[in-house]
Image 1 (cartoon, rainbow, N blue to C red):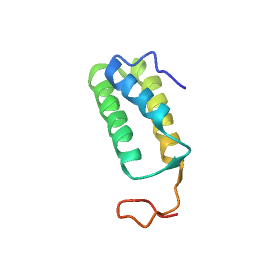
Image 2 (cartoon, rainbow, N blue to C red; image 1 turned 135 degrees about the vertical axis):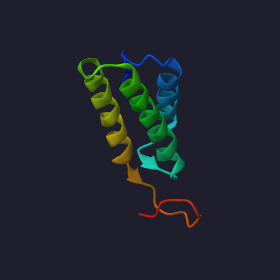
Image 3 (cartoon, rainbow, N blue to C red; image 1 turned 30 degrees about the horizontal axis):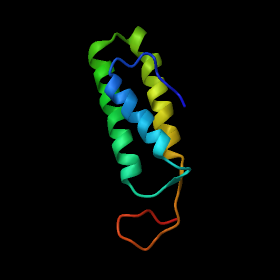
Length: 87
């Protein structure tokens, strides 16, 4: 589990942590990606608005690394239900 100490928004940090605890190695639906990725993008926007490049680049790089790990998870085999990712 990776915690970003530089995150000022503890709600976002706990939300990300909660999602990662519940997640498995596979993606069951697009919601497994959309929610966490949108929260990461919101945090990147907040950093962009409140920090200088000198202080914000490392935080943004960590967040993008987390987003990359989410996007690189393998999809679950299709259950035939709409909204689920097919392999």
